[in-house]
Length: 111
Image (cartoon, rainbow, N blue to C red; front, side):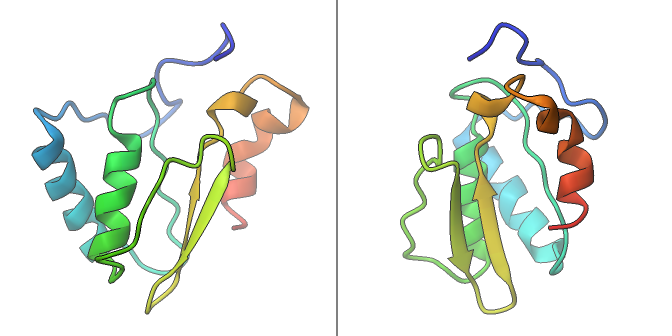
């Protein structure tokens, strides 16, 4: 990870969850409120539960048996759910590697 990797999101809510079960509960609750076109960004270092959140979110959306690996090397995994597709990105390796990374919030608004 580059030295310039930010440790906190520029804006948004911040959660400290007790364990993996709490992460799953939050992800399922968010999945029930999410609508097609919503963008949900997760921010944090390695091993903090971002993929665990995504896995619970995707499974709550109807893909109960779907394998949900971290897209660290593929950069994106796409899951076609009944209501919408979920695009699971991992852009940590790209942060600070090019001028386009500063435009990520603008890009996300058009996904």
